Length: 490
Image 1 (tube, helix red, strand yellow):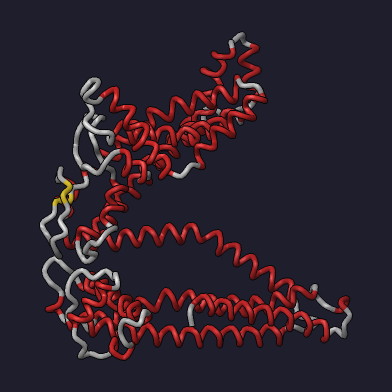
Image 2 (cartoon, helix red, strand yellow):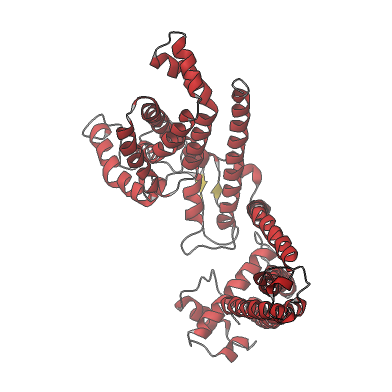
């Protein structure tokens, strides 16, 4: 049974449990609600929660554990001879899973009989052709061991899904009987339900932490797999980015330095545009603008934050690039050879970041106590002197936070870079040349008809890991600066 319908069945049983639990509690009290320890709805929710929580918890655990078990069993079927130089058992297993998913797709489409997909003597050449014709990602000709492993993978997965469906429904029914049986007038249903709700709130609060931990471990494992196939020293010291999808372990130069330089350079240009404009806009809106002007200007400025980045990318490609080319191109100063350049992406990204800086800075400046301004005016300072010497220093921690948010947003931007800066990985100080960033290369390495069982695909995880560490370092540095300055005004 598909997971969606399994969840629907559990929710339906929970609704039945709510009705039965509520009615049974009222019947046990002879219809007199005053004899009940808790309100009738608590008895219904007690039964419903005892259906939902065990069943869905089992479902989640099963969905997480089954792939690990199936992979461990199937991976033992792969002979060592199948693992070529520059590859690993994990990468071959990725090919097995893609083959199994492809067999499911072509069987569902009627391109091959389901019995044929289970036949160990089926011609691997015919299966490879069918998968390619159906648009499935097949890196090379499927070998007999990979096909056998894929067939066993499909059988184990189907059996596991069937057992999971039976077990989840059984848990839901057991929870239904348990909850209904507890529905007696002297049962403390309110206490139980409130404790369960408290536990659910704690679990919801833990999702962010668990998600972060999951992302980090995913990056670490795949980065480790990459460094098993590609030397870490070359990755961090080479000044060339030249991936080659010629096969497993192909001769590629995967140096991160050109990508880091492009990321920093474009982000720097964006911050040079966004920080002054955004900060000055925030100062004007909070200190000089009338309520009417502020009520109109601030929402209009914040509309920029809602524009999709692909629109900014098109704006860079069709407007900013040609404008710069007319001034700095061959018809002007001759510094710019094409519309895609660091300046194109940086200026466009800076425009996108203006609302992040201005809106947050405006809120922080407005939160500075009016008594500090009044004290400055009382000492004879002018409005501009008060802003420069009192308001801005007091708001500095928040402004640093706004700049940090803008920097993190700039480092993680992709579409503006792809459309505005080009795809050239180079080390250059010329802002009128095309460059690229780490995020753009992550996208390019994981899209298209690429060999996913290769360092050229796994390098995307190593790039993502370095980007994560870079962003984390920026946050730690900003936190240190914020705490240092905050102590002066508390």
